[in-house]
Length: 286
Image (cartoon, rainbow, N blue to C red; front, side):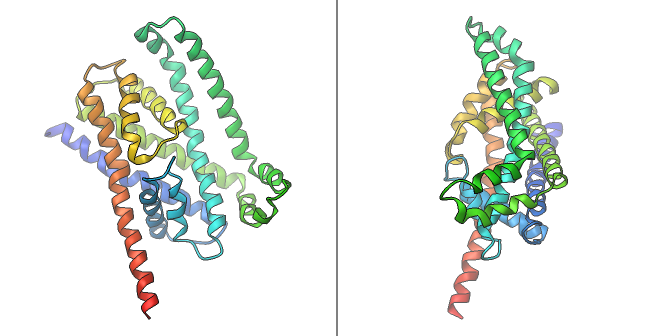
């Protein structure tokens, strides 16, 4: 790998740092309503969350990794803020993925030539559109949702932990959502560049929508990050073979993104977690 493709590969690596840096900034911004944390502390928390998320369904362990960097007594509240941040990223994925389904529907129907596919595509687009609209409404009206939860019997004891969400005004929500949009664009550029590196020639416009649909499928299908690679292969092949017959390249790009964006950060996060453990053991010895 030399020349232009080598340069594209290194840009993908650099964008991995940008990707998680944006997520760290997003979490730092959300945490302001609870406590002030530095960007570096937020960055370590994010990568530690990635490390713990690798073995859990839909990366739920991510919350456990992040709250290790939050002060005692505020950790459960921090989980609520983390969920809000993840929700903003989900909204961007839903919007872009739905648009991708709309713009690629003709290509998909023409390629697979299945009579019932037209009906299923329209049904899927309608259902996902309704879900997306509901998620946007919930995101900007979280205070209403919290008020409803507080009234439910048996949940009053959690009131003080989730009440922190009410402190997030529209300005904060819009800033978090904006960061989520930028982060999504980083995802797309990374994937598009890696496809180029692997000689999978897809137009930027077509590639953008195919990648958007891919991330939508990965977001709505529960899985464990360590086992996610198989799904990435399957979905990538379904979408990118609309434009390229380079099956090996499609598999290689999917594997590369998985390694660069998840496995390498998880290894770094594991080192941070090890540092926390060593620090706590030293405190006990004292």
